[in-house]
Length: 111
Image (tube, rainbow, N blue to C red; front, side, top):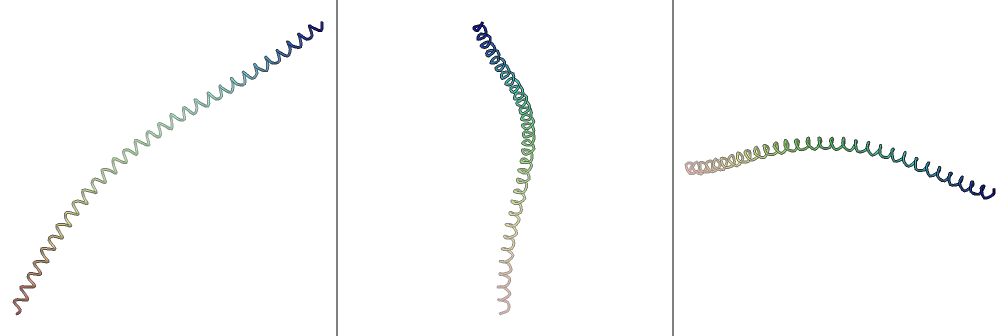
């Protein structure tokens, strides 16, 4: 009879350990389900963020192309203005030489 009680006690202890283990397994399963839900949510947010970044990147590429076009236009206008300035300086130089020549001629005539 004592042997039976010992066996019952051992059996009850094993049952308690089994229940405790089953509870722990269930808690971990629930925790894993929550983690998987969070992972799916984060993956969804990541996909949305990537789509947003891709759209912004496309917009930036278009802005860059537009700015590069404006820069090329500005550089062409600058080159044209530099040519005009060069031509104007040449005209001024020629006119200055003519004036100097006229001054010399006028001084000779006054003598």
